[in-house]
Image 1 (cartoon, rainbow, N blue to C red):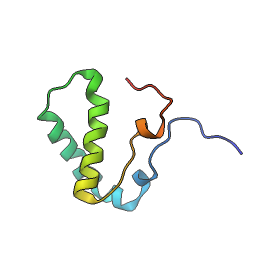
Image 2 (image 1 turned 30 degrees about the vertical axis):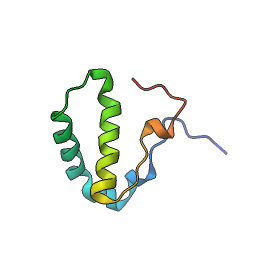
Image 3 (image 1 turned 90 degrees about the horizontal axis):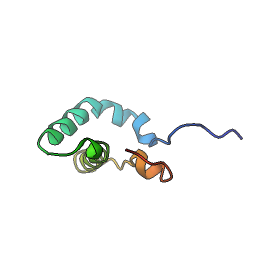
Length: 76
């Protein structure tokens, strides 16, 4: 069996439900991030946390970030 290269992604991102709300989700994430102060190093982690929160609270979608799915990978 061949092992896939690259980072693991949550399969929910390929679902129809996710596809249908993707634009609204990105807008909500962007709006919430614009209200916060953060360093460039914190951006990715913060983006993932906000995305996870919005997906669960607004859409009932449980999502795992690439950080959670790839614990041996160091993200900046």
